[in-house]
Length: 196
Image (tube, rainbow, N blue to C red; front, side):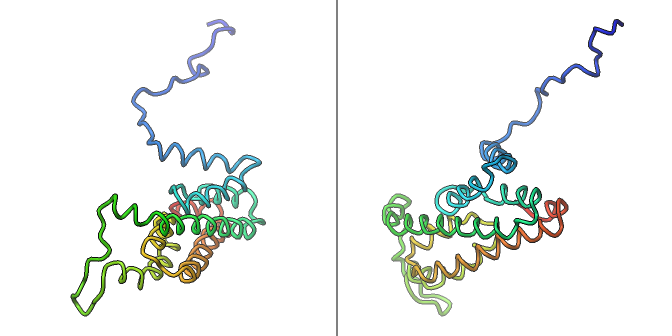
């Protein structure tokens, strides 16, 4: 074989025809994750944090984790800015729930005025959710659930704004700083433990 002929090993591989097609969500997640290696990574994480808290569930941790891996000394700054952006998104989501909540409940045929009188619990569904939803907001702000659900739901059932903010500040701070610190101190190994 002549030296100018490409060998079979050096020819580029054709894409496999039977490769699984990625969902639109996974493609977007990978695109967001890839933004972590660009000069606009911090801005991307903050925009994604706002969007995650208000209208669309793309986790900001897809950007935070690679950023902390690339610059571990800046992990506190990244977590603080991500938390603040997430809180802004949460306020937008809360506002959406509060101002368009009635339209959503009518569209989805949800009746929050249904009365519950069982097992020592008494009140309408809306009252019961409003009374206890801030605890759910706190838990769901920490757990890997889309924050927009918490934010919009809090506005929808009229959780007092100060309770929603308290739950969000505590929950989002814990979540961002927990993820950031685990990545900072355990490095790439942390990705096996974190589902982000």
